[in-house]
Length: 377
Image (cartoon, rainbow, N blue to C red; front, side):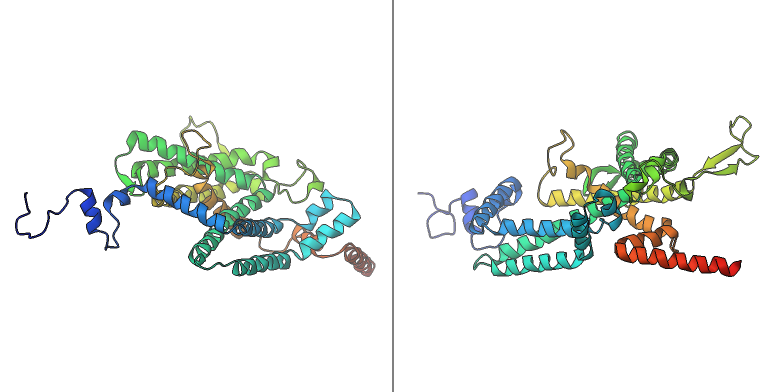
């Protein structure tokens, strides 16, 4: 019988079985298992399903946090103005008014109830799994609801502030693909090997130009620009504001004579659109890079398959969420007037004063105006 040279014992088995035995005492996983991401993912899903069956109330707890965050985020968008126009029933009016007034404290105690529920359901030998799921639930809620709330808030400021940023992301994505397909040579980032510097730079110029042109086109439609905060004013009868009123500029004399216009009208909002376009072309794509890294970490191609060839809805919205947050912050910081206006004061009166207090304020203002009129005369 053949023996290994220099060995006094029986022959040592060779092949994959031997390698697995030699690695048994090591913490390092065998290469065959490391590279098989599908098998690991399948095993993780089976393990998670088994642990979920051991904690029947834990999934219900996740729905509790889901409802609480949804109530907190979207409840902040509700206002007394909307209540005034939606319902004329006195009981329902008071009920919704109280819910709005005590909205924050209600959401807080709902969250505390969920927190206590989580502590009371902790089960021995399941602590790590339960705390990891608790962390995942909070992370997902922060990423999805926080950002989607900004999207809804943009719609209430005017469809323009939702439609323009969303359109710029789509244009940037398409332009990056076209420029990258025809001119792409230099890789941009390792997370997305198909993305190139040529596509990135070309898409940036295309997005900036599109932002300036689209803002002019959309700004001409009044129904896109008016805030939808009070349904009683009607959908088409509103003042879009000075941002959407054209300003005229004389064309410099050095322009060629064949240029058909001697005077150009530009909406002030077009200058703001350039800032949105700059963000959509430089910063927003990093939302897509983040999603690419996330998918690579879990060895999946797409988040879903609802759109054939393009993945799921989440795959199409990875940059939109980042853009929606920036559009809202930019609008509140640089577009909304910082000084008090009649509209802002009226909003505060309608939101924070009861009907009796509003009537008392109306009477008091009438007396003050009458006294001033008599004093001037």
